[in-house]
Structure formats: structure tokens, C-alpha cells
Amino acid sequence: MTHIEQSLPNSVGVGYKPQHFSDILAGAAPVTWLEIHAENYMGAGGRPLAQLRALSDHFPLSVHGVGLSIGGETRLDPDHLGRLKYLNDWLQPASFSEHLAWSTHDMGFYNDLLPLPYTETTLRTVCDHIDEVQNTLGRQMLLENPSSYLAFAESTLSEVDFLAEVTKRTGCGLLLDVNNVFISATNLQMDARAYIDAFPLAAVGEIHLGGHDEDIDDHGAPLLIDSHGREVADPVWALYQHTIAKSGPKPTLIEWDTDVPEWSVLTAEAQRAADLLTPVSA
Amino acid sequence: MTQTISQKQFISAAMDPNKPVPQGIVGPDGGAAPKRFAVYQNNIMVGLKAAMQDGFPAVESLVGKDFFAAMTDIYIRKTPPRSPILALYGAEFAQFIAQFQPAAGLPYLAEVATLEYALRRSYHAADAAPIAAESFENPNVFSARVQFAPAMLVLRFKFPACDIRRAALGGPKPTAQAQDVIITRPDLDPIATAFPSGTAKIIEALQAGMPLGEAIEVAPDSLDLTTFISTLISGAAITKLEYDHV
Image 1 (cartoon, one colour):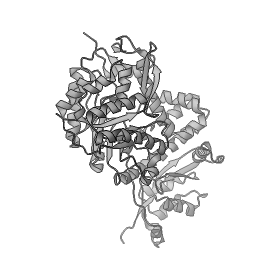
Image 2 (spheres, chains in turn red, yellow; image 1 turned 90 degrees about the vertical axis):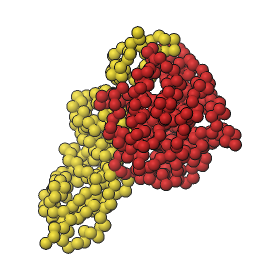
Image 3 (cartoon, chains in turn purple, cyan; image 1 turned 30 degrees about the vertical axis):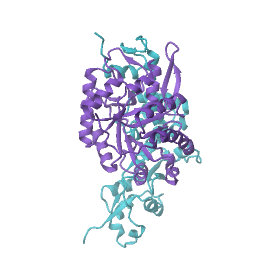
Image 4 (cartoon, one colour; image 1 turned 90 degrees about the horizontal axis):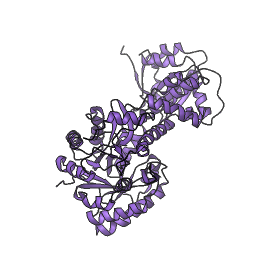
């Protein structure tokens, strides 16, 4: 069984936004750790790196990649992997994670987490890519479950079986995005709790919570969109509570990436997560 | 056997709304799901358009939101990012604007885009410690060769691009003079300073290794040398003065 080697605390973190820099240094409670998007810190210098240097002195960091394209058909971009290694070597973050998705093809980077079918072929490719990442970085990584809007007729494995097999074969940990589970379950008309109940929770090194938008599909059925632009929805909080009741306490992140609110709004969300974590931490 | 969808097929359909959704993309009922596929089409464009808005606020202000959205839509489909580092996306935007017929009525627009992109490059450029202002008190200073910080950039424009940008972002009305621009980054925020046309030649001569005294001889008559030098010093633009050993 996969052992989680990272060292994020089993408490609440938030996705770091530069507009909150002064607020965070003035007193971040109840937030105890921060997550950054790796690709925002790949310039040569200037303010982004200066802020990161200051934050890394005060907080455990989670480096979260959004552009490595681990689910891509073609080989990983060696330049990009090199940049991730540089950032990891410099920061020595408590955690490094990426997505079960792809975003680059040929020379293009498409800035979204695009879906892949779950087959024996894609399973082998993803495992090869994760082996390469872990060997290059010299550390365990976490792989995040995606939010799904559609399915592939060619898929032969369920997402949970796919992720369980990835962690078994590569020894990587998993990042369980509970909002993504709720979105995918609604969109693909599956049972979100059954997904959590089947999930290899012992391999989970971090949980994500975030807000989503509501739309409808071609037939008028609900279609939820992962927007990270508002509060976590009530049924997602309930699913989170269900998850940590089974898994025990886990490092939990509040993600808010668009229409970024005041720091106080974000800490209110973080407090809500902390309040749910406390009883399972006893 | 079910048809497999290549990522090439997926992305060409996602980037071209006129192409059909690949067969085998389905909803929960197993049927075709164009609206679900459109979520990805939309996400890609929304994210990249936001990156362009963040990077080119003065260009957007000069042409208006709707024009900018339509122009960037064409640019993004033609020139998607080549790297996941979106902070540097838009390198070819100025060139694109220069060729973009509907924007031909604003001949200075491409230069404003060049300036905005250069400010972004400066913002992310490597850190470098500047020399102390006292270093210029050396009596031999004019024989020195100058090294610049990576965040110092120099641009030549046919239009008063620096003033136009400032006016587009709410500043005073622009002058009618062509401008060269020196970008410096005194702390962490780049500053664009306009100089008379021809000033860029001095920087270029210094970058080529010409001693300070010789380089300033190419200065245009209208240049105030004191302002020029103090902009470089206060802008933390000079990292070294090198003297030949005699």
C-alpha cells in the first residue's frame, strides 16, 4: 500500500494569491500552510520569487503543477520538468502535486486540464510519466483526480480503479479533490459517496475544496463547472465530512482562483474546514 | 470496437468551433454531448483571454473590451502559448497587431503592445544588485564600460508610445513626439521613462561595450543627460562600471 512521504500538516491551507501577501504575513490563522501554482513562479526573478522566498520562511508550502500534461500521449516536456525540478530543489516544499489531465499537444499549451479516457494504454502512459517525474524530482508526487464534464466511450476502467492502479504501480500519492468528485458525480450521474468509499484513502496526501458554477447540459440535466470562483457548496462540505470521517484528518486546501475575494472571506472558508477537521483529529 | 480519440483530434476540435465534436465523446447516457465538449472550448479561451487582458491593459483600453476580445480570440487560435508559463504569453501580439487590418486605424497600437510586453519581461527579469550612486563620483567615470541589470530594457518607437500607454491607463494626454523608452525596475515594479528619439542609441552603444564618455556623444541634442543618468541610477539599472587597467 502506498505510504505518504510528505509533510504537510493535517490542517487547513489556502491557494496563495499575491493580493493576500501582506494579510498573510500579518497573521494567517486559521491557515497554516500555502499552495502555489508552480507555473506562476518560473520567471527569472522579480516580485513573484521575492514573495515566495518570504512565504517559504514562514509556511510549509505545497507546489501544485498545472502544466506538466501527465495525461498527455506524448513524452513529458523535458524543459518543463527541469523547471519543476529547479523549483522543488529550491523550495524543498512539503508536497508536490500534479493533475490526471493533459494540456499540451505538439508545441501548444492549452491552459486547461483536458480529459483522457481510462484504458490500459493510458494507464501505462500515465504511470511512465509519473515514474519519470518522481525519478527526476527525487520525491513522491501526488496525483489529483479531475473534474469531468464528459466521458469517453472507449474507457474500460473507472476513474477510481485507474487512480488506485496508478498509485499501486508508481508509489505516488493521491490528491483527492472533493469538489471535483462532486462535480464529476453530478455531471456523469454517479454516486459521489460511492466514489469516496471506493477511493484508496490511505494514499491521499491532500484534499482540495473549492467552489463550482452550475449550468445545464444538452438535455437540460445539471452540468457543474469547476470554477474556483466562489464559496464551497454545501453538498461538497457534506461530502468532505463524509470523507474525513473515513480517512481521518488530512491536509485540506481551500482553492479560490477567480474573482479572488478579500483575505477575510478566504479565512472564513478555511475556518469552516478547520471546524470539520477538529473532531476527526482528536 | 470503440474508436479511440487522439489528443490531436480533441484539441483541433476544441480550438476550432467549426469542427465537429469527435465521435466517442459522450454524456452519461452514452449519447453525443456537444455542450459538454464546449465546456473545454470555453475554458481554454476564457483562461487565455484573461491572460491577454492582464498582460495588455492599455491595448484593451485603447480599442475597447469588445474589439480586444475579438482580436485576442483570433490571436489565441493562431498563436496558442508554446509554454505553460503564461506570464510570458503574448510575445508575438505586437507583431500580430501590426498586421491586423481592423486595427490599422491605430498605427501606434502595436508599439503600445510592445511596451506592455517589455514591462512584463522586466517584471519577471532576474534580480541584480545595482551599484551605489557614489560610484559615479569617480573622476574617470567617463572611461568606464557599463553593465546593465536584466530588468533594464530599451525600446525605440515611432510614436509617443510611452505617453499613449499612460493616457490609456488614465494619465495625461500624450505628446506628439516619437519616443524612445527606457524601462527600469528600481524595486520590484518596472517603470517606463520616455526620452527623445535617438536616446536608445546611447544604451545600445553601452551594451555593445563602448565607454560611457564616447556613448553619450551620440545623444540627441534635446536629451537632458542629467535626467538620463539619474533615471538609470535611481532605476537600479546599472550593476557594474568597469575600468580598463592602465
